Length: 458
Ligand SMILES: *Cc1c(COP(=O)(O)O)cnc(C)c1O
View 1 (cartoon, helix red, strand yellow):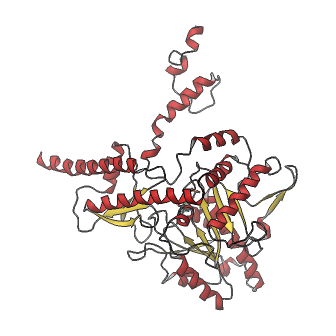
View 2 (view 1 turned 90 degrees about the vertical axis):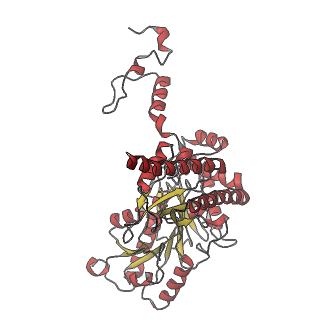
View 3 (view 1 turned 45 degrees about the horizontal axis):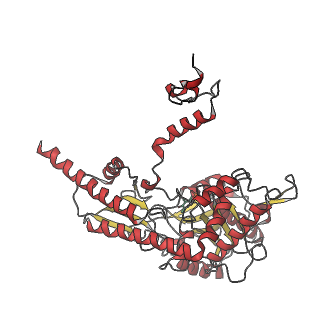
C-alpha cells in the first residue's frame, strides 16, 4: 500500500514504475502533476527544435507571444460574435498581408479584396483551388460547355511537378485532373517554354509556386503572367493564376532578388501563405487573399453564413472551430516586428543560408541545387564527377548521430534518379547554431570517409 508521503514524490509513485497506457482508456486516472510529468517524459526525445533543419515550421516565439497564446487558447476563431476582437485582429492581419503582397495602395478589405485565415497553407491551397474550379464552372457554363460531361470537360489544373502534396489532395478530392509540367535538369522550376501546352478550355487555372518545397526554387510567375495574358486575349475561357507562397510569402516581401510574383501581376487571382513558416507563428495558421471581392474571384457558393452563433457569422474556411490563439500571435508578430523587423530577421536568415552555401561549396564534393540567394533553402547533391563510398542517406544518418535532422530524398517525376539533401534555414537558426552545424557536418563527412578506409584496411 502506498503511504501518503510518497504521493507527493513522483519517483515513489506507482505510475513511475508503470508503462504508459497505449491502447485503451485507462480505468483509473491520476494526479495532474503526475500526468504532466509522464507526458513530458514521452516527449523527451522530440524537443530538439534547433537541430531540426528539415521543417519549415516555427519552433520558437517570444515569451510575450507565448503568453498571449496561452491567454487565448480557449477562444474559438470562427465564433465571430463571441470573439469580435479576435475577428478584428484576423481582418487587420489579412489586410496587412494583402498590402505586403502589393494588393494596391488604398485598397480595402471587403470593399476591394477578400481573404481569410486558415489552419495552414493546405487549407489555403484547397480554397484557392476551389475558387478557381467554381469560377471556371461559371465561365464554362456561360460559354456553353456541357460541364456535366466529364468525358469531354473534366476540369484540369496545371502545375509544375515538384508541387507540395496538398495539390495532389486537391485534385483527388475534387475530381480535377492534375497536369504536371515535368522538371528536368534545366528546369528546376516551372518550365515556361512548355507550360501553355498543358492548357485548354478545361483548365481551371495554373498554380505558380513561390517557394518549391523540394528545392527551394521559385517559379517565374512574372513570365507565367505574360503567357497567361497572351493566352487570355484569344481564349474562349480565360484563366487565372493561384500562387502557392506557403513559405516564400512571408520572406520574399522583405528581401531583394525576386521578380514580381504577387498582386503586381494582373492574372494573379489569389495567394496563400503559411503563418507558421516564415510568418513565425507556431503551427496552425495560414492566410489566403483574393485580389477582388467579386463573384468571379470567390464565387457565391463558397461564402457561407451561419446563424447559430449569435449574430450571423460569415465563413469561407473549410475548417470550422479552432483556437483564436494563432491569430492573436500572428497579429502580435505583425505589430511587434513591423516591416523593419521582418526585413532585419529575413536578411539574417539569408546570411546564414549563404554561409551554409559557401561551406557546402568549399567541401568540393557537392553540386549546389539551391544556393540560398533567393529563398533560404540549401539543397545539394553529390557532384557527378565525385566518387564517394557513401551517399546522402548515409550523411543523413551520420548527422542524426550528432542530433541534426537533414533529410535526403529523390526529386519528383522525371528527375527521380537525383537524390538531394535539404536544409531549411529558419529565423531561429542563428549564426552560432549554423557554426555548430558546420563543425558537425565536417566531422560527419570525415567519419564517413574514414569508416571507408578502416573498412578496407581490415
Ligand atoms: C508547406 C507547404 C504547403 C502546405 O502547408 P501547410 O501550412 O503545412 O499546410 C503547401 N505548399 C507549399 C509550397 C509548402 O511548402
